[in-house]
Length: 210
Figure 1 (cartoon, helix red, strand yellow):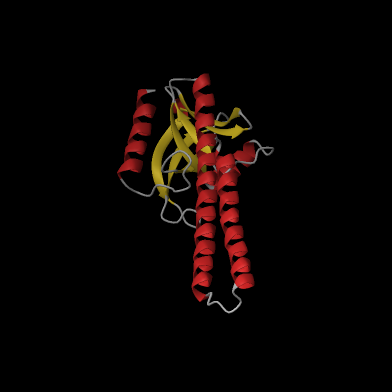
Figure 2 (tube, one colour):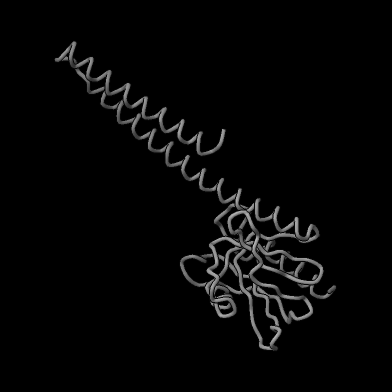
């Protein structure tokens, strides 16, 4: 059963419970007009609160599942092109959006992208439908420096961006900055710590080896 079908089944089950409680109230009032239904009101409120909570949690989980499936589909598509790359789920910074718009004004970056790091180059990909689209390519031979940069603003609060300083084919200096997501499908970004330090060290090693 798909996630959408499970969510619909859950939603209608909760609606059915609410309808049953409403019918029960009507029947009790009809048969015993003077009955004390204060306890029944608490039951109804609890059922409504529980139902709303369950639906909200289910919607959030379904959205996370869709993001994870999109990341997995993109990873599969990229690895069909080059099975040797290692992938990092990421999100573009405002600086990277401006840099891509300058080179490819027809492209609007999505919220989630994936960086692929291979033996000769680093590339940024996003999913368009079921097709992986490569939006930026940086050859290791043209990379000058790789570092971490603090991100300011609400979206990047507590996060830290990876900055790849490189030279474009027209010999102009450029930088590609991106936030690293904690896992495929996640909306959380990594801050300074062992995971980002290890990533930067691995990228620097790829640059040296290439």
